[in-house]
Length: 150
Image (tube, rainbow, N blue to C red; front, side, top):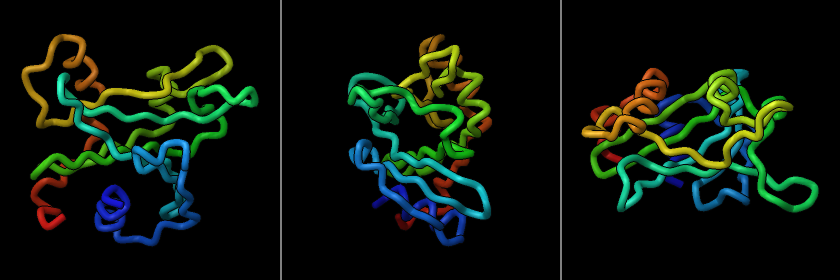
């Protein structure tokens, strides 16, 4: 899986307790630990008609309906890998940021089951996308020149 290859190369550490999240297999969904930090990972997908990359992350509730991941039960970080031709990188969002941005479900917010991502190479964005990129970029690591053999 492309996302795990990029993660393993960057961190150069074994992925402990690696588990596939089958409900999000289209996005290479996994959970694992590295250096006592827990992660949920995904591969963002380029969309043909809209700038940016799309990623889904959800679970089933007891009624078998899709819902956003719960803040309390979530890993420490959400790691989203982006690979687009020669551009490679990842977003590493702490769960506190995901709560602040109302992405994780809490008692007072329903959360989101998907988001759009805008790495640094996405330019000429509309104002809403630019605002989203502004909060996302501090959590982005650009590997474009470091992992060109992938």
